[in-house]
Image 1 (tube, rainbow, N blue to C red):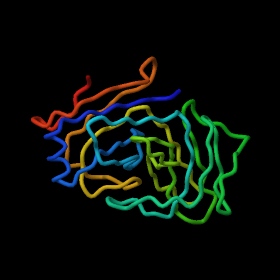
Image 2 (cartoon, one colour):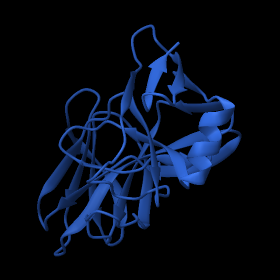
Image 3 (tube, rainbow, N blue to C red):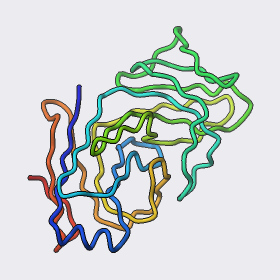
Length: 200
């Protein structure tokens, strides 16, 4: 399924946002994992974001801490309910195992503690980002990580942020757009007088 998010701003609000050097930040919700800036962009009056419900699993040596940027070292297209063994620098589908519906599992078969997560392509205002990380979790050597993405997108404004940045502190109001079921398109407007996004 393809999803669409539209975000609108008034002229005066845009001037204030640019003066504060803030960007629009989108975070995909994924319980039990650290929040990662999925996509960030400079806003216009009318902004469009779209994505499909396809995911990749990735591996990184980036330590999860506020302000760290995820640097993916290995990546593989993932199928829901699949289990992937990671070793020798690659992901291999473990066809003998399955995980829960809507989830993805990674078995860290190395002797290192590594960062794993899901990544997803996204198009924001015509700019395509391939395999943008949506979450991150440290998986110790010999252990596994299970990732269950939700089609809930947190929308906020923040400065000093870029795609793939781990965010443990957020300084602005958050609006959560909940997709799924019959809902594949949501439109919101920023209200500069309250600092909140409002669904329209």
